[in-house]
Length: 75
View 1 (cartoon, one colour):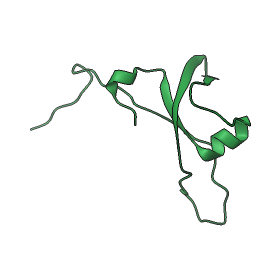
View 2 (cartoon, rainbow, N blue to C red):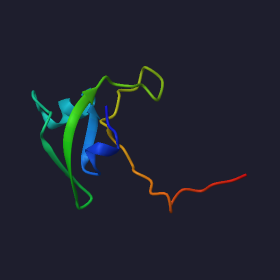
View 3 (cartoon, rainbow, N blue to C red):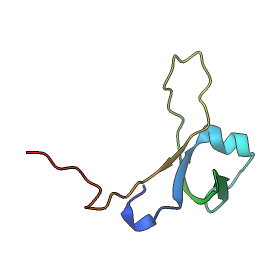
View 4 (tube, one colour):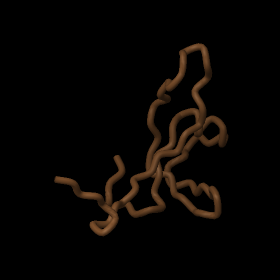
């Protein structure tokens, strides 16, 4: 859903984040986090990282673009 064409400010959030923000139409909404501004591109289903007895935490996912000079190569 996210790729390098989206740029650094596009994110996907989970259903728990939508509920936390109280949004009914989250796509296109803006999120300000740690001094950065993000735009919601889409919503994904909740993913349980812990035991199912724990509620799913709100989450935001983004595509980090790695420049060639940042990448590590090994032989």
